Image (cartoon, rainbow, N blue to C red):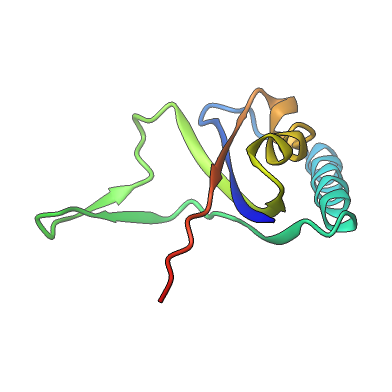
Length: 113
């Protein structure tokens, strides 16, 4: 099996959820990730914070994430799948999709040492 990364994207202007809505969403994420793990296809996941900076090719550092962006990357998951279609099937139940978000699925390239 190959590894694939799912990158979770969402609109920046999402309304702030209530504590109850947040807890329900956390449970959906745990259930979805647990389903992938139960299939033996889970590798790793993390959410991304709101603090960030970008190092440019000319060695300047700029603040980010940027206010003018329409989408923000909220986190990622690495899974094992037979092929990209299998990885897409795993991504299909992602809770970010219920919020109007997107899941970008990319293969992970392995470089031999």
